[in-house]
Every structure is written in C-alpha cells, then in structure tokens.
Length: 54
Image (cartoon, rainbow, N blue to C red):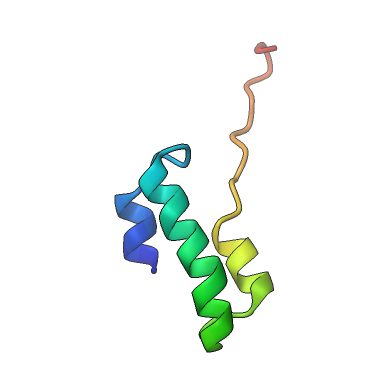
C-alpha cells in the first residue's frame, strides 16, 4: 500500500481518489486494516509556515 502512496502523489487526481476509495472499503471489509488505520494512512500533513508568511 505504501508503494501506491509513493506513486500517486497528487491527492486531487482521479487515480489517487480511486485507490483511496478501494482501500478504505475493501481493506476494511477483508480485515487487512482497521478503519482508524486507513484514516491515518490517508491523513494529509500540513506544512509549517515560516514566521514571515501569511
């Protein structure tokens, strides 16, 4: 799964959204991951701003 996240880096792209939908439904149904783990996997980290930026 981590390989897919490295390949599909544009989170707004259709391919990324398709992977996200598939993983979040199927992996939970099959018992590979828990719902909380899926949420953590696809969580977007915010970049810290520099002091002078607004």
